[in-house]
Image (tube, rainbow, N blue to C red; front, side):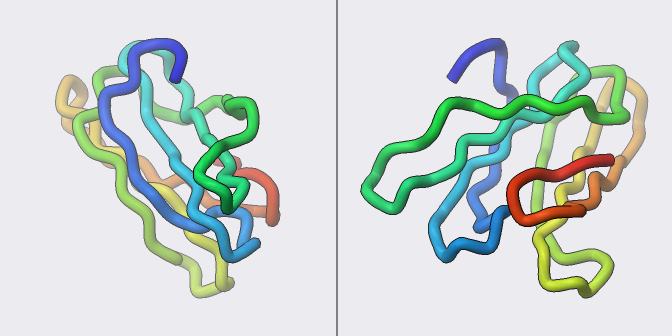
Amino acid sequence: VFGDPQTAVVGDFNNDGKSDIAFARSWMYNIGMLIGTGSGSFLEPIVFPADYKGNPVLIASQDFNNDGKLDIIVIDDDLNSIGIIMNTCDCCISD
């Protein structure tokens, strides 16, 4: 994994039945995602902007809006903030 990942969570973020990994990167202000192939390997990392501006200490997933897609929550200890990034499609997550 590239950059400086601080925390990660495993989940099926694109609803294909295979495990993916989402990770938050310190001071990079984005979320990275590795899409699982189902054979123990992953596709090239996907990176998208996230609305946090500090040091993520925890990333977790849950379907916060009950649409059947895992969303991501990021807890940032430098800014004492929590951000939710909603999953708006089957291939990515956006804020």
